[in-house]
Length: 108
Picture 1: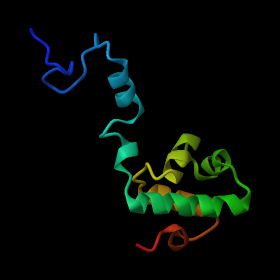
Picture 2 (picture 1 turned 180 degrees about the horizontal axis):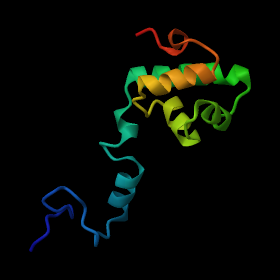
Picture 3 (picture 1 turned 60 degrees about the vertical axis):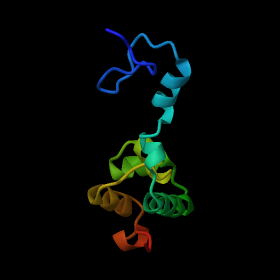
Picture 4 (picture 1 turned 45 degrees about the vertical axis):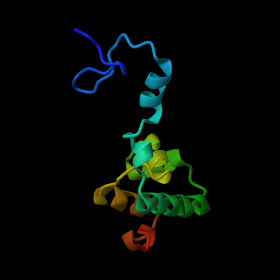
């Protein structure tokens, strides 16, 4: 079986024996289809609002996560605009931030 030049099999998965560390690092750290590259303006605006509501309360991401029953890495990725967050998690954040859903939703 011959490999194609970019070391991907027919399913588009990089073969395990690939020596191209740059390609592996790109896929691991945010390739073209990673959540980091699919940020939408709405997600970024929402994340900015969450941070703007959190900081005056002198609340860390870890504390917000605890109050909202979410993981702190999830809060971080929401604030960076990397999450397409569910309405249920938006409600958890609003309650933890002591504001209404309307207060944390961007005007879009």
